[in-house]
Length: 371
Image (cartoon, rainbow, N blue to C red; front, side):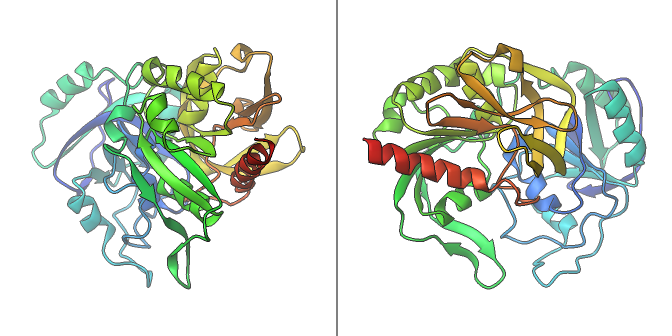
């Protein structure tokens, strides 16, 4: 059910119960398990535009967080039986085990066109006991993601060290090489594949809670600071995160931000963020690198965007979306500070933008040499 009263009848999948959230759509053709476990989907119900979901089953290697943050899922056809040697179980069983409510048999093309034309919709799924009046009441009461601070809900509760590298068919998630640089990652809802890339490129990675103070971060003596992706309204999260980021910029250390980290970095520089009409979510989004002229096919997942006109004079726009021209990346002139709106770690998605992790490593090497 949508907040405007529209009702879609289908077949329940996953756990029984009720889910309320902001309805969005993802256009990726694979990687449904990685998508559902991305913490950036907190507070949202995901519509998959690809009709066949479940064919690779579920396994313990393809998760981006231990506990899914998404509220529920909507799919076209019944969940496909697994057909992959890597599958350790059925996707429907995995949904039930993780208490995720879903619905199948929905005209997802119609639903996607509705979101594209009207913008984000508050939606609810009832699976089990159907109570349309009760569901409508909860939809009317749900406040929506604008103004909602969700990073506190998905962040880690204590500092930890990450040692797992990227995945390969031959050895699964291998350990990285001997670390040369130390990165402190501020966890606003970090995807594990970001941490895996840093480890695989020779970084020792310490992950700290989103609410960490500047002293808590700097006592680890980092060579660079990473600002992670995450859910919710950046303006709401920024009320407590931005002062810390401003202090981090004063240290002169290299800083790299992705998604929510990119937005919070912009807020720390005095810029503003805006809610998009329907957001960017998928694994096929073209982005132009303005400094090289090249085009990258990227993985994206965001419903807010930085207003480029609000950036300070020392910010250089480096990337723009070729879908709608929205800001996709910037750097600070004469400082080792940069960020992108999209996800270079993919998972799922193409590998065009992995060079950004190497750029971060190079920035840390250069800063260490100069100091």
